[in-house]
Image (cartoon, rainbow, N blue to C red; front, side, top):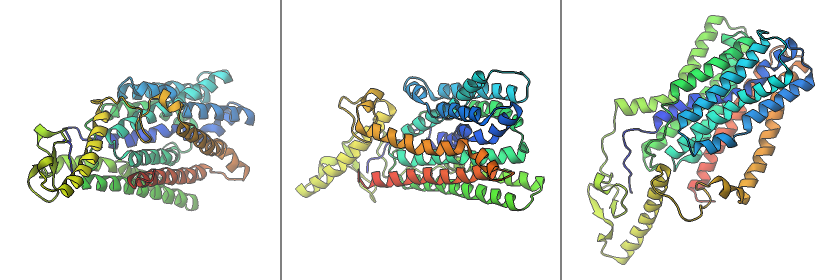
Length: 414
């Protein structure tokens, strides 16, 4: 099968760094961790908390600007804007909740929360678009992995909130205002476009399975430690050790680029010579050491089978070229290909997805925004376990959706 030269910048480094940014982009799910403090410290009533929840939802889910910016600016600039929004928005909330600046108007806090959580859209869009372009034939898998980690972000932040900051909302808001920008600045030059992966390598499937397994292991681990902490008292030293294990699990996707660096794979005999990269005039026959011209077949039946392979290889090569920006399509895109914003607006598929997303996500965030108040109304002293459970099953749905969609696409059912 046709192979495309991988280049010197494998996309796995960016995917490993994107996992951390995706965790940071889940700061919009953390509203239940400090909403009760806004209510008690600032004297807000339930109606005002609900309005702040609306600001949280608007900021988190309005992503049209970062979506348009991703087609015009490099990923590091999108990440920089997201980091700036996080610093400004959560910084104002921290000033208010610590009463460093007293009597801030409610409307200012509303806009501050909307700006803070809008950083989610900028961070998530930057890494999703970049990595889906870097893995053009595994988009469903990549989206499922990254969105799955986004679902786990609330559980990760809950662990940090309870173990490191001992349920202090003010310290946690300061962490969001400073920690998220620091993480973005340390990873923004790792999340960048590179030579797209061809997707026909058996090792690549193993890499994806490893990352998916690591994410599932981390989800189960966080769920188990949260439930354990709810039933028995865990000493601080043990809690910090458990937190360190969680961080190691977050580092698991970086094992792949480290392995590729320390143990580089030898050049395969099935790889097209460099002078023929990008050409469809040559076909590598699996299991043989020679590269033969496509038109050297001596039988009509052979020509038919070769033409089938060439068509599939040419389609993959064209998809990779489009991902690199080397080829521009003159025809209208088909389902599953890249659409411009104006092209998507006239498609029924777009509006169906918009409606499903609006209904599905809308019900979820409605419950999420009032999760702390629901727990308190039921007499729970520590409501963080509710957020951890919500986060875990959010992760399961997101990761599973990516795996299932990729299966259906690979089977050509759509």
